Amino acid sequence: MNENFLEQKLAQRRDEQAFRSLRLNNGLEDWSSNDYLALAAYLSKQNGTVGGGATGSRLLSGNHAIMEETEQLLAAFHETEAALIFNSGYDANLGLLSVVPQKDDLILYDFLSHASIRDGIKLNSCKSHSFLHNDLADLERHLVRAESRCFVVTESVFSMDGDQAPLSEIVKLCESYNAYLIVDEAHATGIIGTKGEGLVQALGLTQKVFARVHTFGKALGSHGAVVVGSNRLRNYLINFSRAFIYTTALPPAHFETIQEGYRMLPLMNDARTHLKELIQLFQEASLPFQKLNSQTAIQAILIPGNEKARLVAQYLQSKGHDCRPILYPTVPKNTERIRIVLHSFNKTEALKSLIKAISESGELF
Image (cartoon, rainbow, N blue to C red; front, top):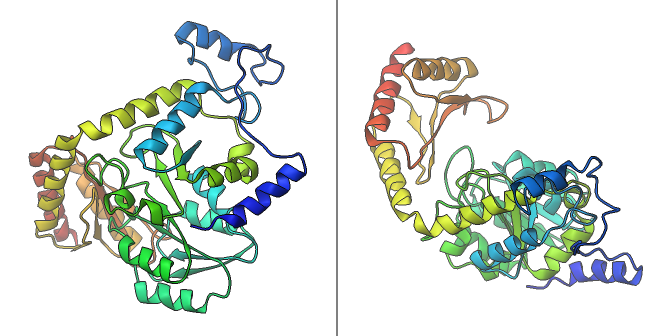
């Protein structure tokens, strides 16, 4: 994949003696951190060598060996050259999409893309258009018309509908039109694949995707996110991504949690199997509302109208089920819904009880 457009700007930074790179403190006297009262240092001594806060951005005082160790572990897990951790999935999408496409480029993004993707695109000065959700013909219609370098952005599993992007077909289109594919794997991480590696790897497409975003706040039960891709992309983000450069890093101790989560993922096949059984049970259930077709942990029943969706949610809650309504404008008008997230810890009998309550709620109208 040609990434010379990144190298040109990196070379300019080197020529200007302004190239940024991450460095470790290596025991030097601290004259750069924001640990004004030495609380981070104190907590580190109390709780172990990584027990306190990062004390600053990673380009100043906040880089620690465990951070780079974690990124190497994640790069290996996700079968890519490099990884760069951001403080959240929102930050990762902002940090990636706001700076990688250049001003003369074009971004094509799925109409149902997450708000963080849309916000990252808004921060970029390049042109952008949405294509109809998972519609390959509409995507190709835009690609045919593209007169500049093009980036295609999608989610592997969509956060509100729970359906999957046709990634293999999207990759073929991107190859045909020399487009760069960026995939947000937030809701696939930990769930899809033999070890929870995500949809891109499960389909064997790692070498055909320009960048992926994996988040730690969903199946990994933690916080933060990682952008995986080439070494050149990592260097570019370190130098140009404001969402990475101008923020205090995650606490070093938090990286132990991330590492432990990734160590656990390959060992959780029983949990993923049970989750699949719950998905099948819900999909086969007869309900009085339209049920979206989803083979993932995210399930939804459509109840058009904010008031009606709220009413059903209140009824389900009265029956002991913590279900939340998703209302307009979070979702398009007349697609308001109850969003149901299945978990490996949910018992089969509990799901049957929820299905019964949903059926009963149909009598409210």
